Length: 401
Image (cartoon, rainbow, N blue to C red; front, side, top):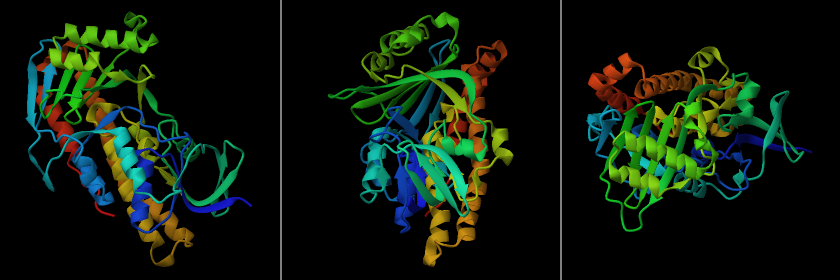
């Protein structure tokens, strides 16, 4: 007899663990299926904006994250053409619901923090879903090991190449034409960077250097690949050299170059950046029956807003709230109530997702364009506007559980 679950979550990334923890706080059990044998923390770190900390506070782990990560005071954007600051934005400003709060959080630390708050046995590793089918009021999950599970609710938090999103009929994410590489530098004696985000834009690339705490510095670099890049993507060493050459030519400060020179980089030398077409979400199926998607399975986006991880945490809180209400007072067997809860979640997240995906793509295009007109507008007055757009998109509250 196949195992039966109330809620199965596919993927133990940010969205999956946030959803599981939110449900746990509401007294609802879930099972998280993770295809890897251990927690995976791809990407080293991510910018965690005001909206993310509101979600983390709702989940009860915000202060644990704050204790280990630096609070930023400003963001400085440099022109890669001149090496001069093009925009300076204070991050000590008031938002709609209080002061803004921006940090760069180590991804593995956050995943481990979320996982540590879950009951033992919540995450089942080496469990990959390979096929999905409906069977009356339940969903059948076929796993790679040949086993079959039955569940009332399936939540796809299984990333850009989501099996669940494919089953729902959402189209594959689109290649943006840009790629990204990243790294993390450790300074046991302290790095000397201030509480600020440093961005470098133009000349066909966008780069950022962001201290996580007193001893760790995260950096990223996105660009338009071309045949002129040669063999840059053949190895970590060649990619590092390629990035450094580009940044030196753009007159990037020596301290920023030093962080890249001594950093650890992923074995995955570079990643093509993909995004979900906003139009596909206007009428697309975010949920159907007892199945829905969240995180990158719902809204893969280019990284210019730094909202991929933050919005995944929002998804988790909203999903847990909707499902928690549906399971309240012993209503977990009410199929209509559970499916209506997923419908409310889908409508609440649809337009937020569309807005973030669209804004991220537009900001990235402007920041990295080599078009003469776009470059002139960017370097003369658009840079401050773009920086303020990042802050404005983070001024959002997903609510409490």
